[in-house]
Each structure stands twice: as C-alpha cells, then as structure tokens.
Image 1 (cartoon, helix red, strand yellow):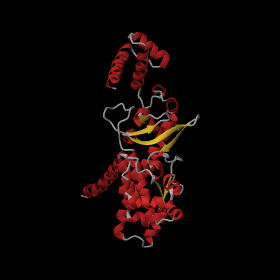
Image 2 (cartoon, rainbow, N blue to C red; image 1 turned 90 degrees about the horizontal axis):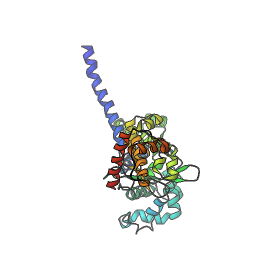
Image 3 (cartoon, one colour; image 1 turned 90 degrees about the vertical axis):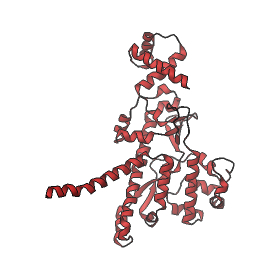
Image 4 (cartoon, rainbow, N blue to C red; image 1 turned 60 degrees about the horizontal axis):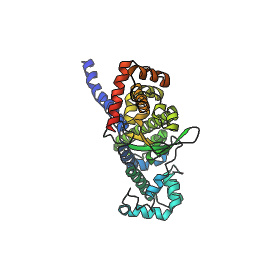
Length: 349
C-alpha cells in the first residue's frame, strides 16, 4: 500500500517536470518575433517592475546594434516603409523631444543597460522610456520580417535576419539587427528576491506567478546564451568563408559537433538555427543552416564548380579531381549521384 501511494504521489511531480521541459523546448523553438513578444510580456509584468532593482539587463557579447536600425526607427524615417509613423504619434513625439543623438545613444546603442538610467539621462519618466524601447523593438522586428533569401537551400523557406557580420582584415565581428538579442539577458539577484519576499513585499498568492516569471527569465537566458555562443562558434569556425563568401571555404560541420562544443543537445542547435540568417560582409544574406554543411553538400558544391569549368567530365576523372583539388574522396558511383543532384539543384534556381 505504501509503495502504491508513493507512485501515485510522484505523478504530479513528474507532470510538473514534464511541463518545465516543454516550456524550455517552446522557448528554445520560438521565432524571433515571438521571442521578442515574450520578453516584452515578462518585462511588462507587474512583478518585474516591483523587482526591477533585483533584475538587471546585461549584454553577453560586445556587439552593437547595426546602425541601420537607428535609421529605420528615426523620427525622420516616415518614408522608410518599415513603419507607419503616423500610427505612433506619442512615441515619435518622445523621440523628437529627447533628440536624435540621445535616442541613438540610449535606445539604439544602449549605452545605459538600466532603463531607469536611460530615462533619467533623457529627462523621461520610466513609462515614457519603456514606450520608446518597445517602439524600437517593434520597428526592428518589422524591418526583419521573415523572407526568402538567395542562399536558401530549401525552396519556400523564409528567414529572419538576426545580425550583420563584418570582416576587419583579421577576424569577423558581429552587429545585431534585433535589439532584444543584444540586451535581453538577465542577471537575477535571487538573494535579494528572497529577502524582498521575506519582508512581505510579495503576497503568498503571488509566489507561483513569481516562480513562473523567474523560470521564464532563466529559460530566456539559456536560449540567448546558447544562441549567442552558437554565433560566436560559427563565426570562428567559418571565418574563411566569411572572408571570401565562397561556399567551398565552409568547413564541414555537423549539429552534433556544434552541440558538443556548446555542451547542448543536437536538437537544441537545430531549433535555434531554424529560420534565421546572417548578413555577410559583401551584402549576401545566408541562412544559419548553411554554416553547417555536411560532406554531401560540400561535394555537390565542388561538382557544380567543376561543371562550370568543364561539362564532359567522366565519373572517374571527376572523382580524381575532387580528391586532388578539394580533398573529397568519393567513389565514381557516389560522384555520379551527387552530380545528378547538383544538376537538379542548379535547374531549380
């Protein structure tokens, strides 16, 4: 009887753990617009405001927001087509009041990580500063609505651009397109939150909501941290490609290898790269999935490049050239299979 009772009593706990895992999967899988909305919901939660002194926004990577964002949401960008500025008269009036320089300094470049400090420096109330920040987020998301890209290997797939990679002559650097990627990571003073609760700052009925809010912020942190470490890893591993933008300079890279380097599950890597892209130095937009080519894809690229050089390759001579020029060793049968696939892909473009 005791053994049965233990099993029954463990069911709610198992369901609770499953619910937490499902929440984690959901947040890791969220498209950027939905993630930005979730972040906005958390930051507009009444408890977030009351605990603001214990929750600090921090940057993970020293990567600025790309200056195009500033022009896109400038009070003078009414003709940009990104936003109907007339729909946001209050926000535009606030931006005009603080001036373009302060707007870019505190709401685009985020010189102050604290919204309260930005508000004080600009002579705004906390609510007014929050309205400007939300307006910036909305404008940036609309500027990066999912769309097809030239590099996309999946017909009909659309992508949200998350950042722009530059090459300084030695190594790549990143500038974010979406502000929530640059700033939405949280340092939570849990001891301070506990003390706040002990002092009666929180009603007993509010504690489940607090636990859910802090758990959601933890999952957002995990997602942001994983994504930003992923981009840093890809930029370092594929730096030759970023410099030349030549497909064959991409290193063969699997989700399993990336997952091992980041200490996460391979499915996590797949969820995070899906539907996202980067602008590369020469202006192309490349899906993140293209930064993880397998051996077959690289062989197809090499065959396609050689086919432009010469049309009447035999299977044997093509296999030999792949081996000597690209270090790709394949049987003649496999070469012929890949050649047919490469021709089909070329025909779809």
